[in-house]
Every structure is written in structure tokens, then in C-alpha cells.
Length: 493
Image (cartoon, rainbow, N blue to C red; front, top):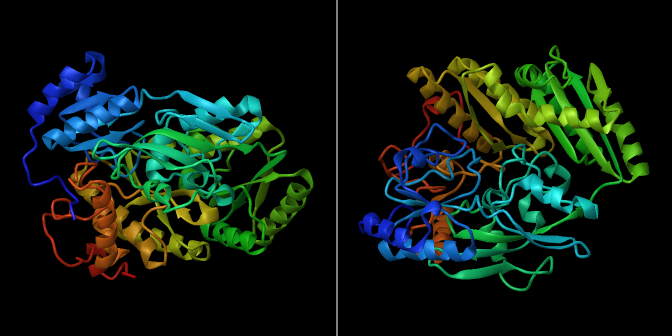
């Protein structure tokens, strides 16, 4: 099944001429300086300059672009805001980037049925802003929500801080309009929550641009909760904070969000935002409950008690919406704040069982010590979605190599503990070579068959998700152990 660019040589020059004849000049980027803007996404360690970028305005533009690529055998990479963190929008040198960033209109809103149809370039937070006058909002809330696009949320199945209670993007999409890799326009999903037939909508969400390009999205809106209460609990160690999370959920309390920051992350956040986190704490939990007044009040009392029972040294309760916003500003600024304590970082995105949080955090610390590097942890503790940030100096080639190896080791460690390689950032180019640690050859072959059913020519976002010889050291064959596995520092599940 095709996973990379087809063997037939693409005719990029003919394709470029066809693009020039089809689209306005202001829609095309071909100059080297302009193309550099699109050579990577948020994972800047991987960079490839594309041959051409199209700034699409409509579904019709995307159809025309895909058909040109199909005609001339040229691969294409969909791109939204470019905030992805797994290299999912990494271009091909002889390929085209099809950007939907200009497509950011609200196409319709149906407040009675709590639905809105938007174009894929609309920012995540802009959806909630457009629904605010109706008392509604869009629940998925990635930390980059003021800039990341809804189309990117669909591609990666993004979650955010409140996914513990409200789920991921897939739980909030009714239907999408897709341009397939063969240039057809199809509608997946429908007006009902569970339409008849195969769940092709579920197949597409999280497919990272490998099955087509989404051009319209009908999102599910929720009614804003009546009561919201937020606290920050300080702990001496990250392990104690992790135990508090397990205790909370085991008692049947499901907060809207449970986030954790370790001491390194707190230091960066406080330096950048002055959000009021305690720099002396070994770790902090941000816990938010929402719903009806009576239920929130009762659960908040239980939450406070459980935090104290698990050795919380201090509990700060937000006394106003402004204070709550400041707490969340600190948490959601964490990635950007790392620049205050390190020249560069790599962010990982693995998932583990909640009950393994304390143990895995200890193992991550051991791996970091062995690699001679620092790791800051800030993540969605409630659902075990880790976001370890490996800090390093990108000007030091040897240190950069160690950072990349450590980042990979942490992702694969999550699999060893019964978790997965990604919760919401996707596999992209970053973790494609780790897929055999989680999936068998038969699993990967089945996934490739699904991909080939949508994209028989292998032109849609090639070299993503699946391991290939070109990506994985130009070598094919059986699983190769990671260098840290050979030393006995990590195991393989």
C-alpha cells in the first residue's frame, strides 16, 4: 500500500504552470523567501521548502488544486494555521502546500440545534466567540486555541484542557465536507449524532491530512455552564500531585479539567505571565469543575479534601472570573514560556493510564538524568495525556541529538506502560518510526489499506504516520531497538 511519494516522477513544472493559469497571483507563493514560511509547522526541527503554496479561498479552489496535483502526479500537503507539533504539515520538496488559512468564515449558525458550520481556517477560539451571544461555546480548547484552526483540530483530533469531561474534537463534530485525494467533494457525517452507515467521519477525524482536505465543518455547540470553580493545589512533588489525580477520579469526581505543571514549568510560566503560581511548589494541579451550582459546590468540597489528603501544601481558589482567567493564561502559555528557561525544546505527546502517572513521571526524570538534560512537564493529568518538554540548546549538535533520542524514548515509554504514542498532537513525521512499538505489522497494513482506499496514488500528505525506509534511517525490515533500550534504560511493551 502506498505510504510515500509514488515511483512515477512528478511533473512539478507542468503543475506549477497549471496553478499559474488557474489561480490569481495573490493566491500563489513561489518565491524562495515566501516559501520559507511554510517549510515547517510548530515542530521546527524538521524543515523542507515546498515547490509552491496555494492560499485557497473556497472548496472549489481546493478541488482545482487537488485535480492539478493528481493530473501531474504531484503530492500535496494540507496546512491550516501551522501550529501542529508533530511535523504533520511538513512539505515535500517537489510538492504543493494547500493552505486553508484564508478560509475562516462562519457559513451558518443554528442555535436551536446547537450547531455551527465554519470553514477550516477559522481559529478554534473564534468559534466560541461567534456563538457567545447565543450562550453557546465550542468545547475543545487546545492551548493554542487563539491561533490554531478548526481544520487542524479535525486533522489531529485535538483535545485541550477540558477534554477530561467533554472529550476530543471527534465528540464535537456533526459533519464535514471533504475534498478527497482524487478531487471529489464528499460529505461525511450528518445532522444526527449517529448517522446510518459506516463511521467515515470517525475515520477521517485524526487522519492528519492523509485522507483528504476538509473545507467545511459542522461543529456541535454546548450551553455554557451555570457554575464554574477553579483551584490551584501545590504539592511537594509531581508524584504526590499524580496520586491526588488518581484519588480524585477514583472517588467519582470528573472535573472539567485537571492540569499539572512541575517545578520547571511553574518557573517558566511565572517568569512569563506572573499568573500567581507558587515557584516553591514541586508541582501544581489546576482543577476546574463546572455544571449546576449544587453539584459543583459538593464536588468542589470533595476535591479540596482529596487534595489535602494527598499532602497539598497550599490551595488557591479563584475568587473571580478575572483570577480564573489569569490561572488559565499561565497554564496555556506554558509552551511559549519555555523560552524563558531554555534556548529550545521538543514537546512530546504520549498517553498513559492515570494510575501510572507517578511511576511514569519518575521514569521520565530518570531518562532525563541519564541523557544529561532537563524535562519540564505540563500536561492534561486527568486523562493521562503527557506533554513532556525536553529542554536543550539547538546550537549544540550533540545535545540536539540527545534531546531527539530522549524525546523518542519518552514517547515509546508511554507505550511500554500501556498507553499510546499520541493523545492529540498526532504522529506526523516526528513519531512515524515509533509506530511499530505500538502496532503490529498486520495493524499497520490494515491502516495502509484504509489510506489507500481514499488515496490510491499516495499523493495526500505522504511520509506521515507510517514508518518508511526513507524516514527511518533508509533501512527497512524488523523493529530496531532504540539506543536507550539497548542500555536497559527503557523497555519495549
